[in-house]
Image 1: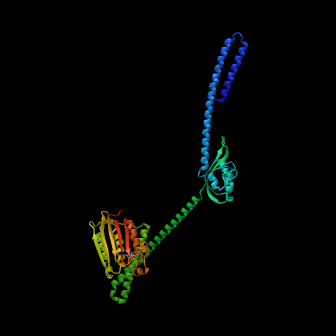
Image 2: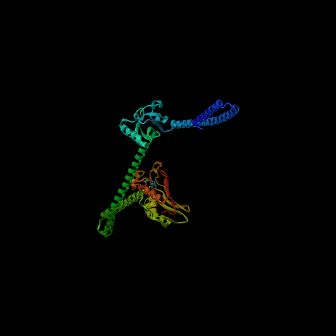
Image 3: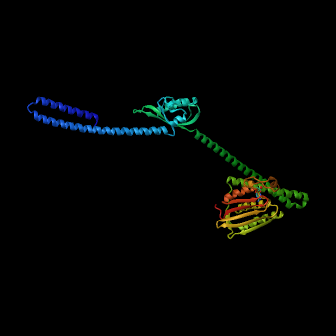
Length: 440
Ligand SMILES: Nc1ncnc2c1ncn2[C@@H]1O[C@H](COP(=O)(O)OP(=O)(O)O)[C@@H](O)[C@H]1O
Ligand SMILES: [Mg+2]
């Protein structure tokens, strides 16, 4: 039941009563009958009116309820708008601020009530105002802008990086009558992004220079090795073929050439290995072999060196299953480095090599000496390339400081680990843990 209907109903009743009135005044003879009929009809009409009134009342109640709901909803939206973490503005089509939430007032460092009525463009620095006007026009025509980055300035003229999303508010004919703005301060994010980019660039440069270094090392070592092999080889031939023609002094010179050449070759080979390991080019050639025999070979090779220094070189094999899978040449290189170091840095006493099994899958090789030892501070660096602890000692005992760096890199390839314990003046213990079967 709407109001018009109700009005027409009232009109109907009125007409009815006029009609009755007429009849009462004209049709005098049947006056009593007429009166009864009239009263009846009036009663019916009144009833109808009553029903209509009731319907209207109900509708009215419903309307009040709807109104309340709408008010609640509006309140909710207002609160959402006010307490939203991002800055929101409502402007007219010229960018004049009509409404602003708390975050907007914080971002632009100006009270909310002062914000109203100001043009949004006053928060745009002079330099970017043209761009801003263009965007405003664009927004008017195209209804939407998304994630547009621009420098803004707050009321104190401090600028910040802002990301803007905006959309037009349209009337029912689709005509733009206002604009909604979402402003987000992205200065911190920009800064973080710039930092990340800087670190990435730095990282890239570092990787590049490290790659270049390894490459130079590899090329250089390779170019040196070939002529050096010729020097050693031909000196050897000279010595063997013409031994009788040389004076003892010349013989000594040739022997010195060969000895130094071999030292140099060892160094170059180490550098090549290290470059290969660092570049990840070195691969293991895995095979099954007897580790007890391999350790025997290593100590045999170094026995002469230890003997020269009056150092006792001993081995202890405490292992049931002597078969392992690994690269025998690389494992020999690794262990030789450790045993050679132990002898090199020991003046009196002994060097021992012990082989045992931790369990079915793991073996342990311990190289222990009674040498000069390593201080706690130095222990942190000895596995770094070209690191030697005491240059005065090591210079006399030769080496480049590559040995342990190679050991460490090889162990990574083999899936093993190394630990070291040492006391200055007492000696050092290097403990290598290896899988019995290295994975390819
Ligand atoms: N058994 C050891 N006893 C004492 N110092 C050691 C021992 N092994 C290694 N070092 C120290 O660690 C340094 C690095 O060793 P390494 O990488 O093999 O280089 P290099 O043998 O060429 O000096 C050595 O110069 C030495 O100072
Ligand atoms: Mg060494």
